[in-house]
Length: 70
Image 1: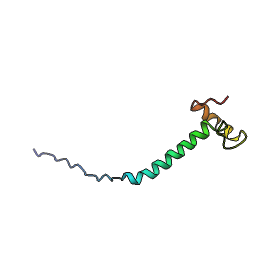
Image 2 (image 1 turned 60 degrees about the horizontal axis):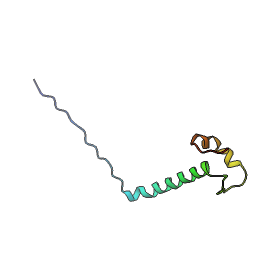
Image 3 (image 1 turned 135 degrees about the horizontal axis):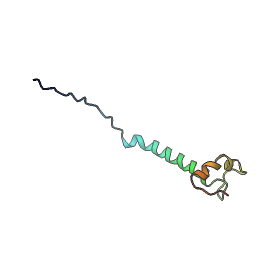
Image 4 (image 1 turned 90 degrees about the horizontal axis):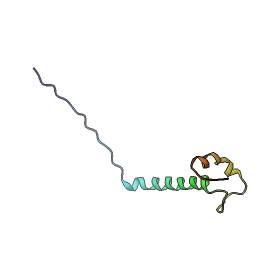
């Protein structure tokens, strides 16, 4: 009776330097902060645009995320 040998393939997992990820992480953090601002705080004391257009565009998202608007 012969013994079966199992061959396990070896994979090279690429490493990514933190310095390469940092600018993208900062970009997406700022983008997320801008989105949260427009969904949660626009049309308030720190209003960027006058009128109710932004409020109407993000109205459902505002309620979905728990921000009161009425």
